[in-house]
Image 1 (cartoon, rainbow, N blue to C red):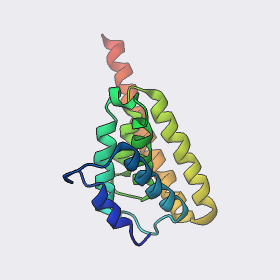
Image 2: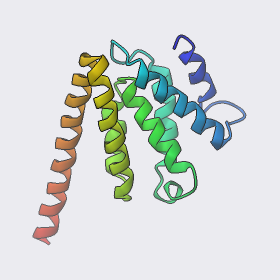
Image 3: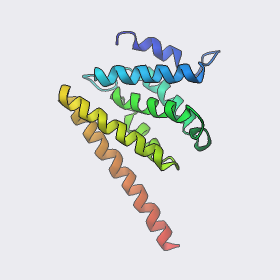
Length: 156
């Protein structure tokens, strides 16, 4: 856990030689797994790492890329790692998954983060409560957006 900041340098989009997709996938997986097992006691402790993960997720959330091999896995793990880090970007990251035109992608994120909440519930109630509140904010905003779209379609 103490070496997480070195991973931020690996994922820095300003690097001259970007990481191969397979390595980005493994790094995102390692970050998520570490925070899954050791949820942070405070929110937003590794902001540069979360920022780099967010840039990676946004790049791979392109609807065409998301359908390609390993891109959806990379995007989902980046989003899940941001949430597991209890980053200030967590709400935006989760919301971006739900806005994807590929509804299956948001469903995968929701299921994985529900499992994360269950794991945290047994070991860190504060982190589990934070995740439950985040879930409520994200879903209420998403439902408001959806109902706004429905009202727009009904008036046309």
